[in-house]
Length: 289
Image 1 (cartoon, rainbow, N blue to C red):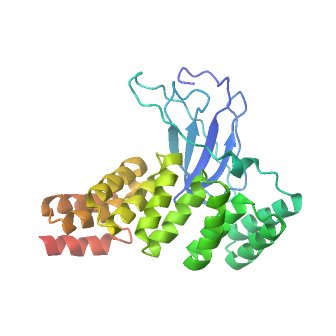
Image 2 (cartoon, rainbow, N blue to C red):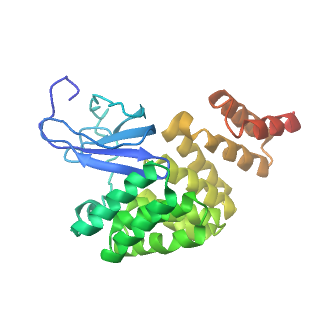
Image 3 (tube, rainbow, N blue to C red):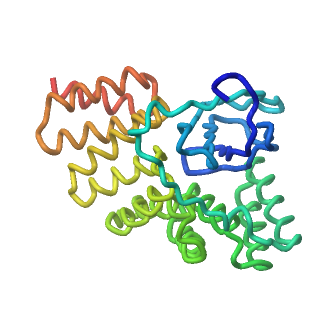
């Protein structure tokens, strides 16, 4: 709690990566929680005091997980500044966490998760397909299958499990986000924007959803919305979403706003000077100047 005392109620803790939620749990009534078998990498931990959302802000903190090393972290809830703040109405998909999954399907899903962490993508995909053969409505398996196919660039294949997941539970954030990402990459911008709007209804503070909504809006030539969404992605995600500044710079260039384009692209280089987009941004700036 803000005064240093332990919690007296359960709160939701979500482990997030770029493509959506990686895992979620609830604390016990003393505030303790544990997430096991997390692969090495960069994550954001988000805490929502969902039983007291009129009193506390959403709290998040970036963490780095190292191989075979536990992370111990203490998160403090932040009281809302005043009663004038808007309550965040979040639609939580309980279906993804509360499905009664047959044990055999759960074993295949856990096996798929382990294989994915070992870099064995094809074996993991095969295990997810076996899980779905046992339990076709397995939301987490449908989402992870779509996400893995997305990462491999198999976009047409990814659409089928992701569309199935969104039909089973239209309030599921992860499948809607991943569906939006697939559709953006396929340049189906109008349908992508619809999926991302549903994702943002469930998770208004998701920088990834705002980023891809910005790309979809730009693709539909809605530059005003593209600007808003890309700004939100960077404001919410910080340095890890600096790529939003590259796309924002392109939006400014598209409408002939050279001054804002230059300042935005320069800001990107300050945030990520050795990033994969840095050579392109340097060339853009050289051409502008």
